[in-house]
Length: 401
Image 1 (cartoon, helix red, strand yellow):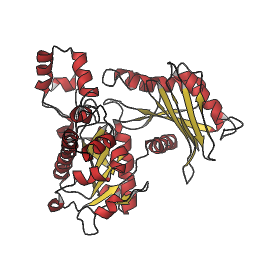
Image 2: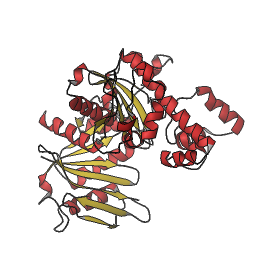
Image 3: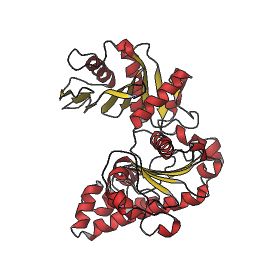
């Protein structure tokens, strides 16, 4: 079965074409970026090692999907004979609210739910919908499947998703913890269980998705039990540019002393805070901050210490919430690639059962691997995430059902 995965953003469309046979082969992958603005370009590569890159005349998502479709059947770079070979399109969608608790085939009703969540995900949902409608227009008759970031977290119990605010704000306005990065957390939890050789139903897993956006999830028996992000992706651990957990009164105080508007404070907390704001070197890239810290920049060293500490706190909290732990998973850009960050997060936790093997931790690899000692009570693993493959797998499951 051939499945196309689409991730539509504000000015870009990422795509991956899978052959979902036993090896789940990537046939082609690429990105069209700067859509609707000057310098629109396309990057493309296929399984044969052929690559192309250059400017394209694309002004909207529908034109982007048309160009992508033409490239997939191109006589030089194409990987399929006809677009009819594509049996479904899987879409990454950020917010589904309470009404979507699993990957679903996109219908008018589902699109309505997606629209209802625009206010909770204004930077993502509108563009996700545009990607769906573009595929409906270009790949006529091909089923579209929505894979929602929030769906994996729909199994959380009220004790973990309700806030300490008037109950009617939940019942009438659906203000609650939703959580994000669900597709990634679901994928790496499954992969960790398979690699470990135990049924996921028997495991307690803490998954640490650490990229520019970061979230920690407690997974119990294969289901999300608690997660660090909330109504929006702002809550939780400190991130690249997001503040993470903060006293709500800080917002009012900043507005008062700085004379900022709601929009300006929203921008400050989402785009000017996190390690970007703490480090003060104009970069949210942990590699840049680590480099500066190694050269003696004390503010950068402090930013990294705070970042690691907040993550460590969540891991400890979820160990208690789960009543114990079997596997701790590190994933996403920093989680997979920064041995120094992983070591900093686990510093001083030997007495709690986290025994990191320094030599294993220092090995750079793109493979799933164990980095704890053989006698560690908790297995510590690095599991590369693959959200595109996860979306393709969920899309296949929806079609099969």
